[in-house]
Amino acid sequence: MQAKTYYNSDADLSNITDKIIAIIGYGSQGHAHALNLKESGVNVIVGLRKDSSSKADAEKAGLTVYTTSEAAKKADIVMILIPDQHQKKVYESEIKSHLEEGNSLAFAHGFNIHFDQIVPPENVDVFMVAPKGPGHLVRRVYKEGSGVPSLFAIYQDFTGKTKETALAYARAIGGTRAGVIETTFKEETETDLFGEQAVLCGGASELIKAGFDTLVEAGYQPEIAYFECLHELKLIVDLLYEGGIEGMYYSVSDTAEYGGLTRGTDVINDQTRERFRTMLKEVQDGTFAREWIEENKTGLKKLNKLRSELGDHKIEKVGKDLRSMMDWIPDNIKQETEPAE
Ligand code: NAD
Ligand code: MG
Image (cartoon, rainbow, N blue to C red; front, side):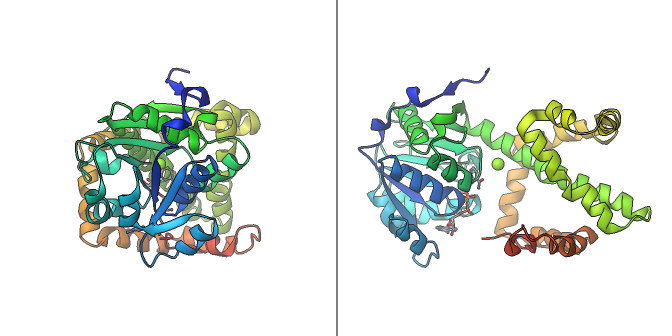
């Protein structure tokens, strides 16, 4: 592999076993980090809001829960795992004043540090350990004795030992069992934003909608268009995930392979690629970040309008009816229109 990758043998747990680690937030990543650290023999505590609904869960799992500011005060390493848009406020009101010289401030995503929303004091270490997978996978795979490939990055190295600390942390959550790749806050943040806009969330959903609309406008039944353009994407994504693009093409029919290889470039053409480059520039120069920070400050008006427009799209109405026929999808997921908080 081209990228420098670190494994268990490169990471020494004793770099963190004499420390107290506070995990702030007990959501997707938070619960996985906290429980994996605990089972790796690390002294971990959890910091939550006073009224947090996760407090009971964390305590039931055998973790000790404090308020965020109490946890930050007790800890040597503070890992912030609350939603990115709330981190600045929580950092300023409950964490900042408790950071002592030589402490570590840690993240699983680089946005707030890279775009200067959180400006840490100079006398602390700042690092990132970011599993490339959702928390439930980080937890499940750890219990099975393996790990999820992860990224790590160092933003500020006050003690001269930040790399050792970050790798020990990555080992404790299972990351170095699979392999941990070194990146920077800049690279992780910019590629993450670009990927979710161009390909994963923005690109994929507009591709689905455009395919669906084309079939429906031409008089085909919306239910059939839904299966073809949205439902079956899962099969293709699973094939891509397991075998790459060649693996996917190997598994589909020759007809699908020929049609895809000759027509796909009509969809993603030079013009689209040029637009991708512009989108990337807007990520790199902070245009997107400024817009998103402003949107949060002004009450998410644009986001709420876009959410409601999407909810009105025919594909969403048809999808709800069709998914109600799919018993294997949990009810709370298949009817979801609002993102879970
Ligand atoms: P989440 O939404 O699943 O969980 C957030 C937790 O923080 C919840 O327990 C919530 O109740 C709590 N919380 C919310 N507001 C709070 C506040 N004001 N004070 C204290 N606690 C509060 O979040 P997540 O998806 O685990 O993301 C956490 C971090 O991990 C983010 O930086 C994210 O970018 C990063 N990350 C997420 C994933 C993923 O797949 N979910 C993967 C890699 C990195
Ligand atoms: Mg991401």
